[in-house]
Image (cartoon, rainbow, N blue to C red; front, side):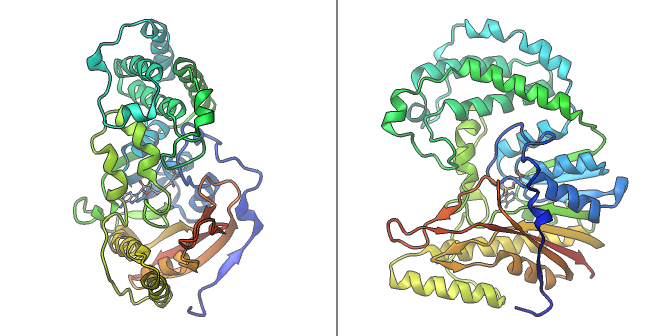
Length: 416
Ligand SMILES: C[S@@+](CC[C@H](N)C(=O)[O-])C[C@H]1O[C@@H](n2cnc3c(N)ncnc32)[C@H](O)[C@@H]1O
């Protein structure tokens, strides 16, 4: 590692006293959400006040965009390939008239006693594997209520609330990102009341929005697209003063499965390709070989490959494919920042086959080659982020090792 690359640990970045759910951040759960205070502090430090033009290329549930709005940025752009992520971000950041929502919600009672036609039950392939028949009928009634909302912002608000109900009444295990079934024993006593849950979630979210008192002064632009398209398709060269983002730290199938987490919601909401989200994300298409010219990365890949070839595995292909996409996206993203502008990447260093992939160093080196200088890397303990804390380091059954206890806030400045 180059001598001038330094990591700095300071307790301050742990934000022990703060909740992940403050302001609008508790409206809907999402995997691997960013600690909002990171975005808040970084905006204060590197933003350009009310002139700030901001980008998050991996927007997820919109933590950074909501914080950019709270900060008072002029414009905030976000990209994501998961429709649910963009829906949550929109509700957090686009104008909503709470009175309209309350007025509309009074009509919900009528929908509970409606008859549902068979044609109003969705027909996606895994429906009956994940929901009890009673839940399917209740969800269909809620969906009818949601989709018959008159104004666009109420429609989106109710869709987001509905998504959380879908998760709660599905037979998936609590606290898992992937679609894992509840145990037989838990299923026997599982009789969720979708109507009641919907009412509780709507009430909670109305309260969150009322307390947050969001000022909708930032022009928010969201793109349902791959962020590597930011130059080629959207021509966003030299546009942004600041990027703050937390990219995935590996391919979805072996790390955080954003698509699986959102699958049932995306299906019920009628988004096309709901089952394909994970394969569209970085590392979703496998390649066999690539040389990155980054010592730390190439060395780690060599070791993983050697292990795999001796043990009939091919995890190394997922690793190479992910980093190739990661690099291509950085090549595009790096061009979107103004000279003198800043990029903040919040990353974790995972282990594969018990070999560490130092994503903070890799990120800094990729940006350095593209005309950036390193400003600082803050190290923080992950205390309350929702992500898997354990992963099997090998094929051994029961072989578990802690993979993500630190998070790195890598700050770079564009100088060329
Ligand atoms: C760690 S999450 C972001 C979480 C976000 N900071 C929050 O607080 O909710 C990473 C996001 O990147 C998205 N993603 C992965 N590959 C992408 C790509 N190539 N283009 C756009 N988004 C992508 C995933 O769908 C996921 O929502």
